[in-house]
Length: 566
Image (cartoon, rainbow, N blue to C red):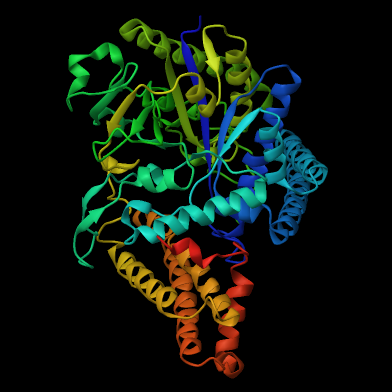
């Protein structure tokens, strides 16, 4: 009998960047992630399968990421990007040869071969990365989970209709592109809000009672979502199941520790209103496992032999030729990368990681006698993009745990099917990141964004409620375009980069561009609503505004205004 289950979860997401800049902020984000993460992960999964090691990976592909990866504009741009990488490697090779640096000249050839192989892989996939992942899911090698449409921060949206629209739009995209409807979901930023009294982060509309997010996601057919560990650890116990549901005190954890209350090693049914009627489960990540990778102090990627992320040859789109060397080593003192030194270090790190997983499961079994789960959640781009050797590390972890009888390597849904929760809990509000609350996405730096967003929500609600779009196709099409812009301006990425002082100008520009397009389209819709013949009277400026939105914002081709109906 195994000690418990291990679930590896990768959250794949990038904001909408197509036709909105290239470098340093814009499409290159998507091209780099594709070249260094999404294609290498496919290779890693295929290698595991070839070696009879079932990878059992749970990967989130957000709808806005799927929309971009499946678009022809991205496919053409990515091929140009790979060609540029090859030419850059060849130019570096010539430069290193002239300087008499044989080792870096060898590394330039290594980079050239790397990008040529990516081009061959992309062509072999018929340039369709989402379809490749969907095929792996259909074979049972991986599980794909979804999210809302544009990674909107749902607890702070003003109207539940906006939350429902984000979820419905996201699920529609996932189903259209993948060919099936995922059951699991990644709540953007792991942000959760229970039912009850809610006040917006700015003085707008006043406080009110709101529905818990668990009911909104369950209404759309989602069976589970992920939360940060502190939401489970600070939860209130509500019910346990022993033939039937039995009500318990809110502080049952210390009274009955053998049942696994408030443990990240067990999922729970979620009910924030104290009811035993619940339809969705919450799964928490294990912070002690995750810190083995992401920690800046003890994380594996900081080992000196691995490829240095920050130092590049030249300026724009430079390639990397140096290793980490040491955690506190100045950039000017970084030593040349040695690819032949990597295999042994990856193996050692993978073995250590697997042993920590087993230790966590063993400790939980000894404490409770129960079959626990260890969930390791990471941003997908950590593996390959930030940590170049990351996909090879995952391959070794998957192969090692697949062969280990002490650990059930499985997807999240497989674990939930085999070991359904026997507890119902009420979770507090919270998120990942600083403070474990909403402060990164609601603070003095960005509250002006929420004021604008709430105004856009209110205006769109008014227009879809009062205008006769069901009877007038031309009006409906303009409102659909406005709805697309509303979804795009709601992305949590824009306030995040502003708060974190990462690409601040780009985040503000992108937010305001979508706001401006939304307002122009909303204004046109209002005029059309008052005059059935108005479409033929569009001014040259108005025609340009409609075309501008169509040219720049090429995702979500089929918007359904009924998504906003509560």
